[in-house]
Image (cartoon, rainbow, N blue to C red):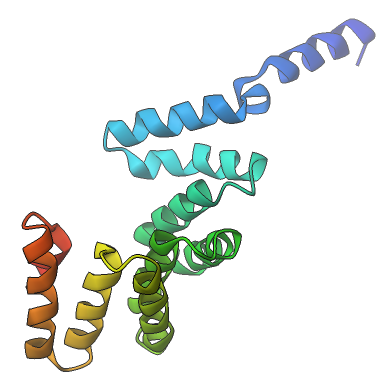
Length: 166
């Protein structure tokens, strides 16, 4: 390849939106897609953002949750664990990891522990409270779960998660 062609190619690569896109720009793209209800399309730019900002626990957690929702539970769980390690005192992070683990019967004991830790940090955390109710219902005690769902609904009558469980 001659020198001019090489310089042109390097110029194209350097200005390519895929290569040159900043973390802030990626985050803006993610937020725009989410606002439009297109969370699945937000995964790819969110993956690139997290690669650039691996210490951003909130976005790592968000990516983990999206991957789990999409069915990639192993990758999602790994990212949620990483986010929880980055912010071990974040109730929502612990509850989100617990929620994803609760979908796997073999991991429900760990999920229950995470919900308990989350509630120790924030006694009103809806995700953890509904998670505990779900574990009780899925464990064969649906009647015992009802007061737990009702307690969430007493605090937030519009809680979709509690209404779904109820």
